[in-house]
Amino acid sequence: MKTVPHWRGGPWNGRNLIGLPDIATRLQDDRDKAALAEYDRIDFVNIILVVNDNEAYIIFQPKKGALSIIRLEPTGTSKRLIWHESLKWVKFGSTPRDLCDEYARCGTNAICNEDALERCGCLPGFEPTYPQDWYLKCLETTRRRKKQLDECGKGDGEGFVRLEAVKLPDARNSTVYGNMNLKECERECLKSCDCTGYAVLDVNEGGQGCIAWYGELTDMRQYKDGQHFYLRVDAVELAANARKNSKYFLPTKSVLAFIVVPVVSEVIPLMLFIYYCWRRHSKRKGTSQNR
Image (cartoon, rainbow, N blue to C red; front, side):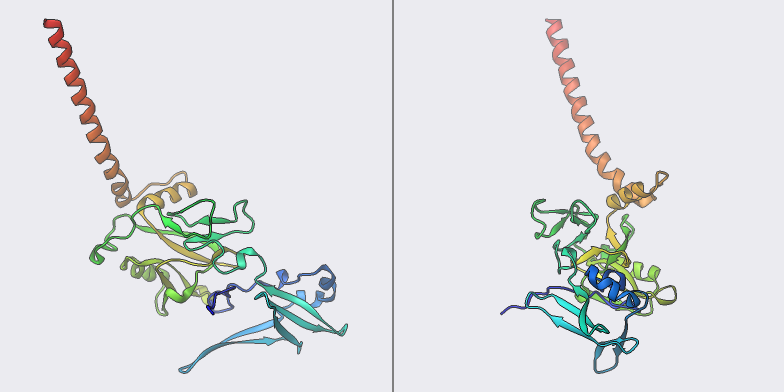
């Protein structure tokens, strides 16, 4: 029997698993909200990451001596229950909590947003194979990656757009650079044709280290407590994104060259063809008049 992911907590960002909902959104039932009012004002669980030479694991440690259990339902949903002084188990939260929480709900190279009219949307620089079927992956709108590795990162106008407040992609195809800042991570990403984006590794103390993704991006969603993700795009998409964010956008020389050259290469042959047709028509008209 094949194992299929149902929900993902997201990578560790130095404070938490980014995909875990915050306490305020965990209160599922109005009847429980009054009973859990005291828990709504505090952090209920300490989440501790332990990493050593032999293993890595996470400890969920309840605060204030509260009793807590996690129950896995046959549907794949996990529910956290706490023991209340009313002598009953009260539901404190569950995952996945909505459709966007389901693993890869919108496919690859896409992002899910529960607050949007269209829940699924392709990332900048991508478009759906079939708009009516979001389970099929989004494809690149342009040929962003080159065939030759030695051509990567040489300033043909490529850059990054910042996606704010998102759940970072599945990190199985990522690489951690613990000693790099974001600028160094950007340069490292541009060296590889396969690098698709990067983000801060540890959000503490203004951000430390970075994590870069190589290949397709899976299981992203808009999330109010999410992080910034820097998505790699080509010059055309970079310019379009900049125009959306600033009416005073001035493209760089590399971006201008990348945009203008293809346009000129198409316009000049068209003008020559029109001129040729005009000259030919003029000659025929002159010949008929001489007769």
